Image 1: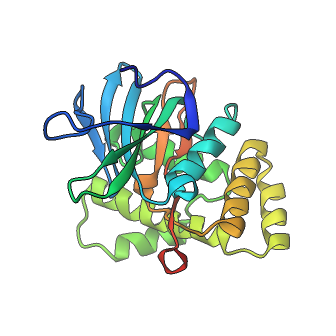
Image 2 (image 1 turned 180 degrees about the vertical axis):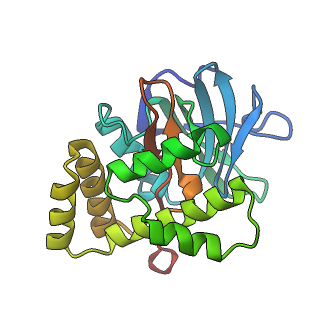
Image 3 (image 1 turned 30 degrees about the horizontal axis):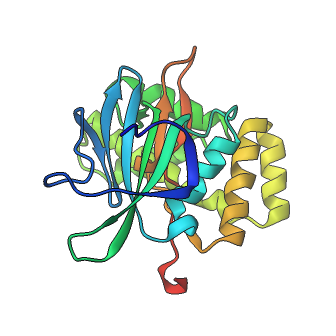
Length: 232
């Protein structure tokens, strides 16, 4: 069975378990989250196996569609192929899983990317001030460089949430000051989904990554949403 023929979110293919797992990983596991696991599938690609709980309104499906619709925006991950499968779960109920092949990205807390990550957030108007850095240091006792960097990332994510809490006119002014057309497009795309779908932001720093295959490192938003469970 060829898993990666086309990008097709609307057609659901039936599949059965073969052994203990539905889709056994063919490479090293390089990431794992609440709804998905990621394994190496090539030198510069990974395969994401994601549980789909809400059909075509699932946060993963909705965001992947936007990634495919904006292939030239560097803030969205590059999706190679994606397919949706249905299967009978161990509890006997029907379940769905999305198989996605996408570019390999680096984590924000990678040791060799610390300064680059802080610099990239500065380019989109979210750089840390000296006072914010000082407060971060004060909250930790004799932190390692890694611990301090991760604290900085927590502060940065709070600033990201602040962007999406802005009123429309305030957000428009902020984005015009940043003057980054790709970031502006990404923010308005995410904001539109938040306003029109049953989603909430899930912007911890594990859901941002870094592309290192270009001339300079670049921030990438990977999994920005989770379902608003009270509405489902």
